[in-house]
Structures are given as C-alpha cells and as structure tokens.
Length: 201
Image 1 (cartoon, rainbow, N blue to C red):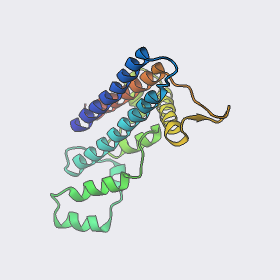
Image 2 (cartoon, one colour):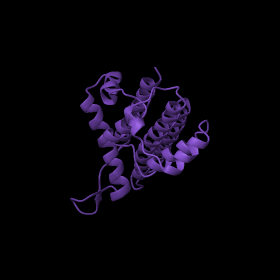
Image 3 (spheres, rainbow, N blue to C red):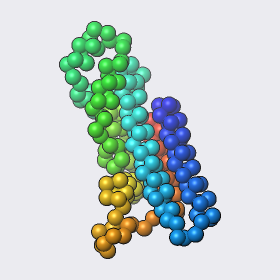
Image 4 (tube, one colour):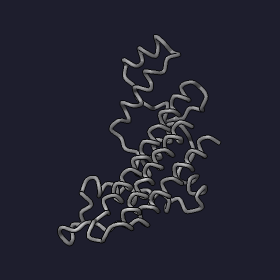
C-alpha cells in the first residue's frame, strides 16, 4: 500500500508543477496567449493520478489477501480468473505472478474515476463503506463527496472526449481557471489520502 500512495504523491506533485508553469507564464505573457490548456492538462493528469492510484491499491490489496496478510472480502472471492491461471496457481501456490497478471488483465479496460467505480475497486480489498468513511474523514456528507468526485471526472471526460467544447454556443469551450483546477486537485489529494488512511489503520 505504501508504494501506491508514494507514487500517487509523486504524480500529484507533477500535476502541481504544471500549475506553477501556468502561473509563471500567466504573469509574464499577455491575455492574447491562451494558457487554459495547461489547466486542462492539470485536470486530466490529476484524475489520471487518482485512477492509477486506485488500480494500484486494488492490485496490492488483492495480493495481500492472497498471501493472507489482509482479510478476504466477498468481492475478492468472486473475482474471476482464467483456467490457465488456475493451473499455474495449483502448480506453484507460492508464486503470485498469475494473480497479478489476472488483476492487470481484468482491470486494464476499467477506469476508477467515478465514485461508484472507485467503491467497486475498494470492495475487492476491504469491507468498509467507502464513501461514508471517506466523508467522515473529510467532514462532509457522503453524497457531497461522491458528487464532487463525479463532477471532477465528468469535467475530465469533457476535456478528453469532447475537446472541452460547450455545445451552446457553437465553437466555444467550457470556462476553466486556476482556482477551479486547484480545488479539484486538492480534493483528489484528500480523497486519496483518506482512502490510504482507511485501508492501513
């Protein structure tokens, strides 16, 4: 688990470095130069950092369960594996390469960005009521925490899949500013740290 949070912190630091570049250029250039795509890149990379973190937490936690250093969950027991992996597991029970491969394969097409999908991933390794616990950690209602995560993921999707275009009026993009992006990054960081605390205490 430590490796996952350490990598998340590195990734978020890289995202914040983009914000420094944006702010520095913003002071040194005129408004004629549009720097808003740097902010959009920050938003995309911040959500990506969270997504990768959840993938890693799930993978590491499932390996811990396999090695009996973490309690198993019903979702873990329902995790589907191939017969090829069953053969490998039976022939060499101490080797977990087959399980790591299965986790990466099964999760490779999944994104853990929306609140419900994040909760699905955490269910594989813990029976906590994720958003109730996270919201208690953050001092806010669970529904608000989930909605905030979903809004950030939705904005990321607008940037990535729709060029951040506002369909009305035609040929304009959704507005974005440094404060909005900083709030999103801060919230993502709080979510990741809260999940880590809940899984390791």
